[in-house]
Structure formats: structure tokens, C-alpha cells
Image (cartoon, rainbow, N blue to C red; front, side, top):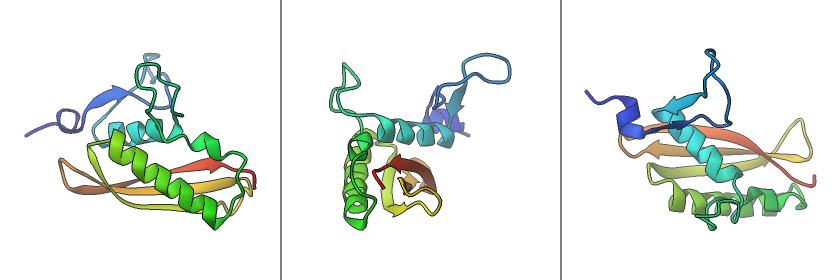
Length: 131
């Protein structure tokens, strides 16, 4: 039987943190893929010197209004970035909606299928907008 770490990978946890033993925390298996998706979403192109095109660049929406047109642009940007930078998943639905509690935030939900296991999963995060 193949372990989740062997099947899906292992890497530094995101956001970087220490575990209960005071060591750098690692993530493995499906959690590693969720962390990698968050890294793609939260990285702006140009931040990685050796991979200048890496990332979804969601911070560029900071001054945009929290409306359906902006949400659609965010969805397109996410699909494009994940299809390019995360080959371990097949992107399903990407939904962006205004936060019910924070007028300056949009809630992003990415539904995907883990390629190696054909198992569905999802990641939810927020994007700061002008409101």
C-alpha cells in the first residue's frame, strides 16, 4: 500500500509554523496539496526569483470592488494559475462570493479532484478587496 506522502508529496506546512515539538511543521498527503494550493493563490508573480511567473497574483485585486465582475476575474485567475502550477489536481469549481461578515473580503472556494486518488477535496480562503 502506498502512503499518502508518497502518493501526494510532502513539504513545509503553509503558513510556515512550528509543530508541538518546536520543529518546523511539515504537511503530507492531501494536506500538502491544500498547502500548495494556498501558496499558489497567495503568491504574486515576480515574488519567486527563479519562477517569476509563479502564482495567482490575487493581491492585485486589493483596490477592486467586491462585486460579481471582480469575482469572475478572480475565478479565472485562480483556474489559470492552478492548472499551470498544481498538476496533482484537476480543478473543478471555483466560487468567489462576497463575505457575509467583512465587506472588504471575498470568500474563495476551490473544489478539485486529487489526480492520483480521484478523491474530491476543497480549499477555502479569503481575498482582500476594496469593498
